[in-house]
Length: 239
Image (cartoon, rainbow, N blue to C red; front, side, top):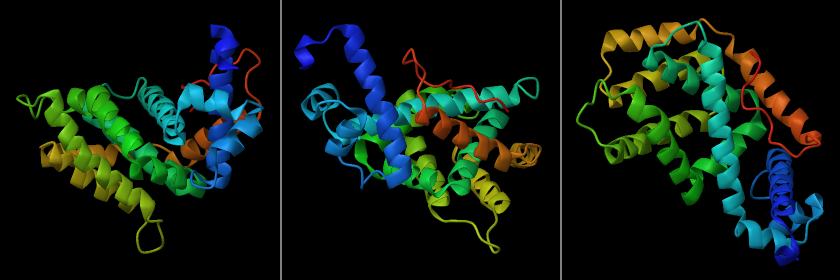
């Protein structure tokens, strides 16, 4: 029972549930994976899991927060020694996200669930506003409060999900998708046109399809065999 576990056991169980849920969400889809199925696959009593997490949506929220931190870290790693320009950082981070959704239908479906559900979508928008957009675009919107940036992120976040939701084809390539998103999103934050053009050119310097596939493959590989110490997977991706 949950009340008989010590803190170390409780933490181990939480991590095991997150590992199992992430794997099931990617393999089966968020909607198809039930709380009972996750608990059974993790080898944990369903009542214990509900006690720790509550609704399945709360599990997704924790995974979303981890993915966001991983994306921020991967973008920093990607740009190490390349640039310290904050707008170019934003362009690189969002380009990576678009490519990740494009190279894996499972990843696209996980993003779809995260952006369509109330709690995860609000977590994404708050997190991105606090850690990214309010820092990156302060220069162009000096009078905006953190709450103002959150409201703007609702718009730009909705746009990135809209672009992720539509698969690319010969008529709308991934490069065109990235360009369209950067054109629209950067204008929301009043970035000058010449800076937008610089950002669009900058992201073309990287092999995003390879980086995105490696990122997803590394995550899936880790989820198949968690570390013995129960620590979470690394958030810096070798690119």
